[in-house]
Image 1: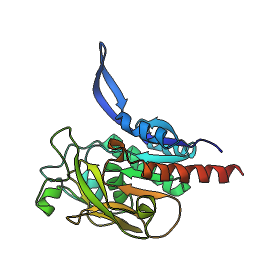
Image 2 (image 1 turned 45 degrees about the vertical axis):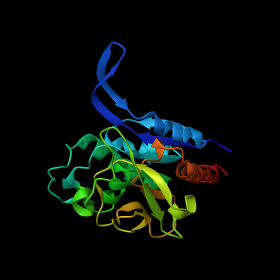
Image 3 (image 1 turned 90 degrees about the horizontal axis):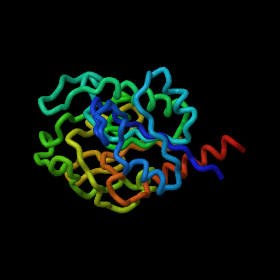
Image 4 (image 1 turned 90 degrees about the vertical axis):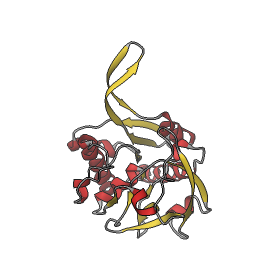
Length: 241
């Protein structure tokens, strides 16, 4: 039985400090690779690259995580920027959308986290709420700067999300954008108490594809990553046999 190789998309920052150095760097919070390792996978960090390389990169992986991060550029879903929408990271948008497209085409297990869930929705033609407090009337989906909030999410029964975590669960969360109109072939599979979509997945059964709005890497609940690793191991073992 092989150990699945799980790729995780990263930030590309113009200035990162360590020791005496202040240089451009590809970075990612350690919670992501630690979550993969705890679930029995091998973590592989994927810095932004030319989109032409995405299919080859994904072909070498057993599973893919699209990590959290900055706001998706609104023009990608046909919207003008909201005053609260952050600056565009076009290189990251292009790269991660190419990774998502490759994973869907190749049938590789895919987990989108926060921004990753939003990008999955946009990749399939969906739209985003650019500032959730405008819709729900509160800021409870994020804490103070640099701190996660917590709230309850309720899985929809008989979904892939519910298979992994069937019970209502308090999750770490930090976002001000969310899914609005669902992308083609997607369904909502969890909600917050205020109606915010907290998870999405395909309407039909097939390869493991799931997006969650919260940040499992910031907590100790490893069920989602274990589900991804199981799916990746199963697919890899079937390909070898």
